[in-house]
Image 1 (cartoon, rainbow, N blue to C red):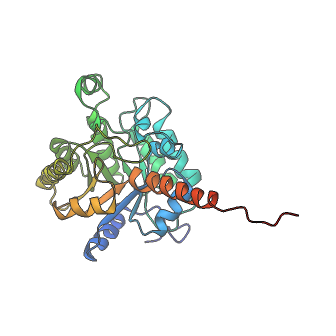
Image 2 (image 1 turned 180 degrees about the vertical axis):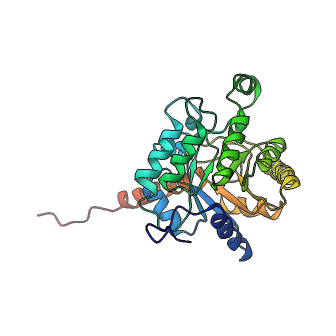
Image 3 (image 1 turned 90 degrees about the vertical axis):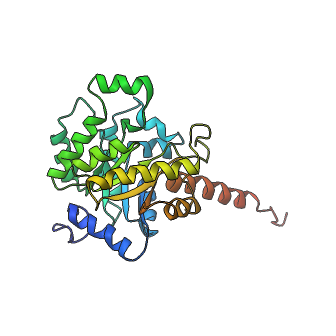
Length: 290
């Protein structure tokens, strides 16, 4: 159903987004969701045929030349940045693709139900839990949980979003997190296996192997589907970077697609700008001298 005010595009209802994703699967095509930190990225990712766009605060850092992990740090208001990118850069330039808003669910300064109302009013068609504390571990993760800024706040945000008819596609790093999100109505899980490798600011030592990524993705998928057999499951991060990597992990798990942020937006810009600049710089000066 098109937007009743504009006749096209966002916002879509939760069911409409689900139907679009199912349509890709029915055509034997993987679901591809992409992070966008700028309007021009969003415009041309849509032209490439992605199924969803996700707006993260990390996209702004990523496209400013910094690692995506900056989005987890206290370098700005994550919720305000995602709303800003959506309002002024992405939503005005896309035509048809559903746009999902990254929401920092554990932000203690916000009444989350009120923030989600603004997300819906802005024209987003759903939510994603980023920044997410599911990728924080060890002592600091324990501190976050004990002091009221844990993963459970992200689960609560998704519960509220589901009641508001917002589509939800959520990061989880462990099977138990997948179960929790499925229980509160998440529409799609993203099996997060670590920070993306490669490029100028990707990780190497902090990543897992492809074999580990395959195993973790399938464990997360099985846990989520024990609760909701119809939940969509996508893969993300770690060694899953190129189309060939995605093909490998999809062929060895029951995952239905891929979420690319660094691997789609940052890698594409890094490679294309470097190569294009080199081609310009290789032009010899052959003009005739007077």
